[in-house]
Image (cartoon, rainbow, N blue to C red; front, side, top):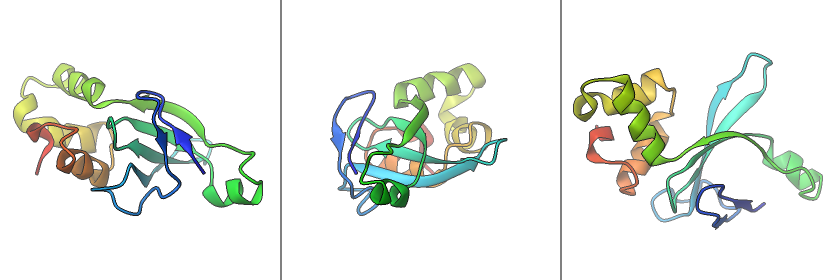
Length: 125
């Protein structure tokens, strides 16, 4: 299944979690909303945008890819950095903690974005 990033408009391949360092996307389970729907983070590793999506790849396969993923929201690295800056007076030392614990971004997603240099060193361990 292919997915077009809403920010950079690049098409992301179907191999979502094969190689987060050299690949073009990362798929990671994220959270369950109040209605019980499971959300995942589909991260474009070209621009770093985190897409909040729901849906199943198996469901897409069985429906011959007629049932696309639903994108609920997205946040790019610049928006995340701005949100962290507005949240704290100490973004250089608290960015990682705020992104993971306050905003709920999965730690694996933050780590990959830092390794790919799509997030700054303030988000590093």
